[in-house]
Every structure is written in structure tokens, then in C-alpha cells.
Image (cartoon, rainbow, N blue to C red; front, top):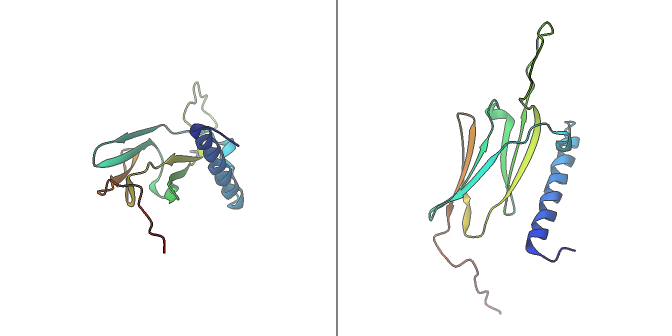
Length: 143
């Protein structure tokens, strides 16, 4: 059992990745462990919002899925490989294709009911508003 908070987070991320792999197998798709595609993520915050931006160039909007499980943002997608001509000698192939599953913990103080996603120019942006009530811990009366 982990003793440090960051160790718990690492364990949680591993479990989420296992869930994504299991769901991929159920859908008869390749598991994300064999993925060739690992998009880059930027996470930022302001006094009013929490923002996640992920680079997804070449992805079709219908091949991207955004969901929230507990306090975790789950972004999944698949970039389908384009057919290659047989009579072309490729010198360099660096573009990635395949499935990915990215999980990001949503911090306390963020209102998950305000999640909004926008995909523009190859960048997916998911934004949340901050809770207006600063108190994250609430007293529960005992009856």
C-alpha cells in the first residue's frame, strides 16, 4: 500500500490505464498498451477556471471521447492510419497512429458540472469553472 500522496496518484493512474485497456479489449480494439500515439497535454489554471489542452492534430472530432469519472478527466481517441502508396519510398515516418487514453486528475475547488470541451485547429480544450464557494470541506450535522 502506498504511503505518500503521489504514490497513491501513480497507483490510481495505473488502474485507470488498466480500465482503458480492458474497455479497448471489450470493444475488440487494440489495447492502449500497444499504442503508438501519446499526445502532449498542457494544464493551466486561473482564479476563475481550470483548463486542459491536448494536441490532437489529424484526429476526427467523432474519434475523440471526453468523460469524467469521479474526479478524473478521461480523454480517449483513435487516429486512424492513412493508406500509404506501395510505390513510394518513405524516407521518414514520424506521425503516430492508434489509440490513446489520457487521464487527468481534476483538483478540488473545480466545478465538474461546468465542463466544456472545444476542438479547434487540432487542439482539444476542456475547461471548468472554479467553485464560487471557497469552502471545499463542509460540516455534516450528526442526527
